Image 1 (cartoon, rainbow, N blue to C red):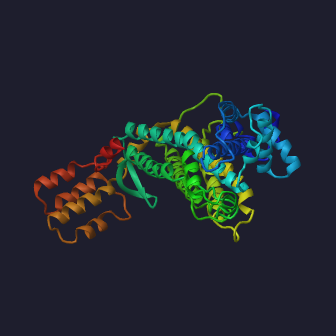
Image 2 (tube, one colour; image 1 turned 120 degrees about the vertical axis):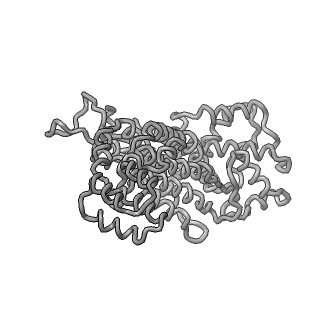
Length: 456
């Protein structure tokens, strides 16, 4: 193990460093500096292409190529240089501006006035909010959605594999009308799919309108330019929606929606893990044994559902952070305060634990084998669940007090095939209906469960 992981304060950078690794390119401070650099470069290129900015002619091929190469090849040495500059400026975004000035200074073809248009008419929040928008968009597309979609695919496969396995349902923890194991897994696959679609389609907004959202500096320099249109074209070039009405900061309502969508996915993961954990406890699922693993330091027989428990814990922690972010970020005093700045830096915590939860949930579900014998044994001992079918058929044929008769027969007492058939024989029913009821077993009484599971 890397010694630095042993001294990390956060499990995401310590115990779970390898598992959280894919997020570093999107949510680390290095990533934030890289995205800020991208925004500054693209804004300079955008302004240079605007005809009304007459003092800044279009950038030549050498300059554009150099800027594009800087963005595409931005590395840890570049980020370190920005941090060195920040030690002097004590301002993280200004350090990026000075870094770019240094880089352009190395190009002989750069006209003298070009560096002055880096960060032109911008407040640091123009750069920051766009950087965070790009970060959250990219981490969603490149890391979170693929992980969730893989989990959904695995759940669909599991649901279809056990679509026809009849299972005793439990409502309020008590025996209830049977279902199939596949149908219960399909419920979660469907829920994940629905919420994942909402998460995937949640719009990403940004603002680029100056110190208090009014284009003050822009108009002071170029009063004839349609700066709203320039700003909207710039954000559209980055595939972002424009928030037109803002203070100094973008109001972050979309980030709250983004977090809340992810919270709902995490909540479904918690629900799934608890149900699977329960089925393992009932022996409906048996966990695959790995010879090199130890379940207990003192009880040699133990094989614990640790991945499901890990997923539940991480999803809960993620939701605590995401819930705070969703409530905090849309609130700022007057035209801005700085509470959002430090808060936004913790997006990686909420998203990191979300990714851990999804991956652990998938691993836990992937270790399960169906124990058909245990499932059938529970069903065979629960003939009382057919009381619903019997009383419903009795109602169809006009039998008085059908529900009450079955309640008196079955409630609070053991029920067997023989007792139920004796009751059915005594009821005034058409012979065809009587025969169908007597042919029914708990394992047959699953409605459309198998069909629903196969269609998920």
